[in-house]
Image (cartoon, rainbow, N blue to C red):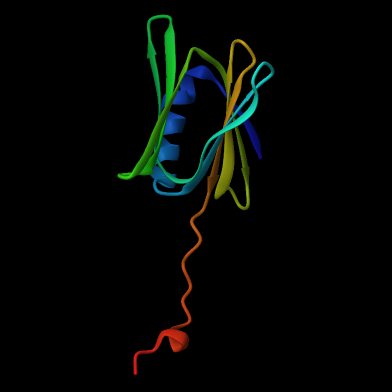
Length: 124
């Protein structure tokens, strides 16, 4: 499912996304013709994404990480937000496009539960 979001729905979309996907694993990638593709972070949990609109200024802030590894990425005056959902709408990619064509991709993955074979770690 690919969904282009109208600007007036960005704040609610990111609020709902952040609430539903808090703690899920992320990968943030920036694609730009002049600098190429850059990974900003991988395997950090999602803290939240916010969209703010004050006057002529729009800002989207992406916060990921934990106490020892935290990152915030701000996008000023984005022009387009697209959500690509897959795997029964659990995982997905948020694509945020800027006026100059730069795209920020926020990949969101459902956390994989840790499976431990208790027989291997049995205490004698």
